[in-house]
Amino acid sequence: KAGVTQTPRYLIKTRGQQVTLSCSPISGHRSVSWYQQTPGQGLQFLFEYFSETQRNKGNFPGRFSGRQFSNSRSEMNVSTLELGDSALYLCASSLDTGMDEAFFGQGTRLTVV
Amino acid sequence: GEDVEQSLFLSVREGDSSVINCTYTDSSSTYLYWYKQEPGAGLQLLTYIFSNMDMKQDQRLTVLLNKKDKHLSLRIADTQTGDSAIYFCAVGGSYIPTFGRGTSLIVHP
Image (cartoon, rainbow over all chains, first blue to last red; front, top):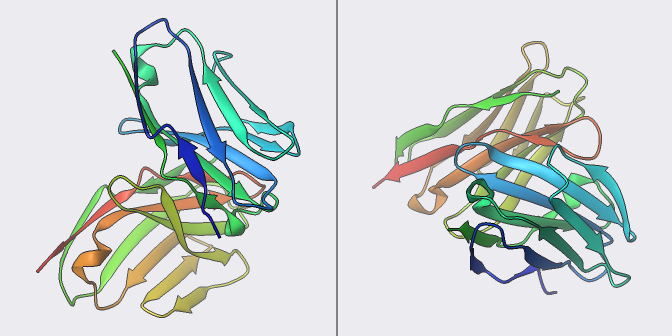
């Protein structure tokens, strides 16, 4: 059974640009959550999608957005990138939102220069 | 909101037991988790405990929950060099848990 796949693994962008990250959940999983991990702030919840609907949202500015497709794959987009957006972005998938069933991808390392 | 605190570092000798501690603030939390993150990898769920339990044991891992003090601990018996990683405590009462900053476990041969 394939795990959670995040692409790309590494990304370098310039301030002001926008970026789209992709997450393919485990087959059959309908919930996808996104997290931002930085040394200073730790692991912070961005948002969670279930059956193509955003069900939960963390405390991030509107520059951070996401969506989920009918096959449960999810994308997150960050517009007008800032240096502080440099982080490891992690995606987790689960059948529903019970975190006991959540599996994390390896993450996308975004560097903003 | 929920606040989850962990010490940043723990250093142990191979073969010793490791105890990683976590405190939280929301007494209504019902799910408490321990995750492991190895370098360059995502988070791996190690174990979890419900708030109506005091202890859970799974092979070398023992989770202890003190609800009165809002204190959670993870004990790793016979710690190996392969256990070196960052360990995250996560606590939640609804769907989305709050994570601690993580404890870096360093195992010396």
